[in-house]
Structures are given as structure tokens and as C-alpha cells.
Image 1 (cartoon, rainbow, N blue to C red):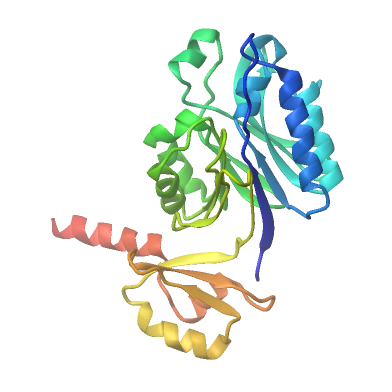
Image 2: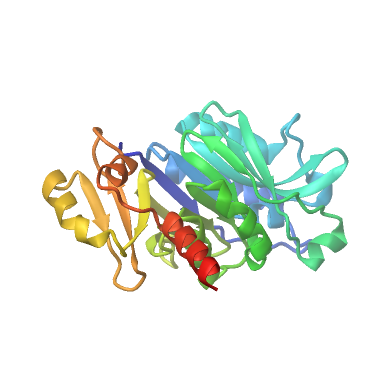
Length: 301
């Protein structure tokens, strides 16, 4: 069954004051973001790591048990917009400070958090603690996995994330990540939502292709995505595609890029899911095909 959600990525542009940080300035821009997004019906809103980096000193790290101004903002926005919020914040937990994504449900309650696992040398030097690796937060907007900024350079975290099978990778960052954004999306078979400093963030599909990007004209990237999907290789599957098209006449979408050798199958109806079609037509999922090829090669090697 189609699982369509509306997603917004909010890029953040902030000029530091003489002290290097200003929580008041960051909160002012967050309020402007909230005004812009009001009533747009977003199911998931993602904020940039710039909020944590420019908006908090170590002493301003907040507790999940006693919200400060940033967590209060995210919680109130979640309630007002009936949305999942993925908010950047320094979090103080058991005497340690983390660079975190905190997830809020539409009631404004904390669903979970991800702590940046691979810190820059600068973050380590000021006393931020690294997190424990990849994890999943189950939300009404799907299975969310987090990565923050410098994390994207470390394939160990990607290797941990792949078997968790996220629907969406959340990426608040102070740098873009370049081709690694697309790589992480494709390797996890997941959508990728980045919220960056300045411009260039946005939403990628599970092939790493842009769905919607922010730019120098618009800091907001917003799109509707469909989480009911399956990815199959073309080998042993493509000859069945015409029969699927004939039978379902637009209820099932076959998205076949020209240069990857795989296809995305989406359900665009309420009667059946993408996996129902996979099972009906005995299609082989991409990862199952790779596993079969890996085993066959190992046996023959």
C-alpha cells in the first residue's frame, strides 16, 4: 500500500557574532523557519547541524529530562504541525555532551536520538563525546537512521546501518558530503534527507538521485515521497515488467534508471504493496540477488 509522506529539509544560513556563537540568533531563524512551514502539512521536518554548532556552547547543552530553548522549540513545532521533527542539539546525558539528532513525535514527545559517532578532532578537543554507532528510531514517518556531518566519511557506520534497513537516512550537517550522500542512500536502499549549512541540502531517492534540493533561492527543500518500495535487479526480473505494467495500469510504478542495472518498484494504490507484487511475480530482490551471486562465486572460487 502506498505510504506517502511529506518531507521538509531546512537549510541554515547563519553569520556568527563576535563571540562565535549566538543562541538568540539561531532561535530567531528557527522561529522564521516555523512561520514559513506553518500549515504546510509536513510529516517530517529535518533541521541542520548548524543549530547545534552555532547555537550552543558546551554549557548550553540540553537534557532530554529538562528541555532548554532548542528542545522546547522542536517539541512545540512537532505539536503545532502534527509532524515528526528531527532536531539538532547538544545533549547532556550522564555528565557527557553529545552532538545529537533528537526525534520528536507529533505530540511533542521524544521518540529517540542519535549521537554523532565520528567526531571531528575539534569536537573531541572541546569535550564532546562520540556516540555508540548506528541505530533506528521507529516513527509514523518510517524507520529513521541518523548520520551527522563527519560521520559520512566512515564506512564502518554505513556497514552498521545497512542491515537495519532504514526508510530514511537523516543527515544534519555543516558540510555537504558530495557523492557520499548518494552512496549511502543506494547502499541502504533508503531515502536520504540532508539539512545543511547555507545551501545544497535536500531529498534523495534510494538510487541517490535528487527529488528536491535547496539552493541559493530557497533554503527549504520539500517533497512527497513514497516509502512503499522494493528494489530488484534487472537480471531475471525485467522480462516480467511488461506484465506488471499491463495488469496494474499505473497502480504500480516501475522506475528503471538508465545506468544502474536495478529497478525501484513503488505501490501507488491502497490495495497492494510493492512486496505483494514482488511475491506475485516471483521477482528477486536486489540484495537477495547479490547474496545469491556472492554465494555462487564463493562456491566456484
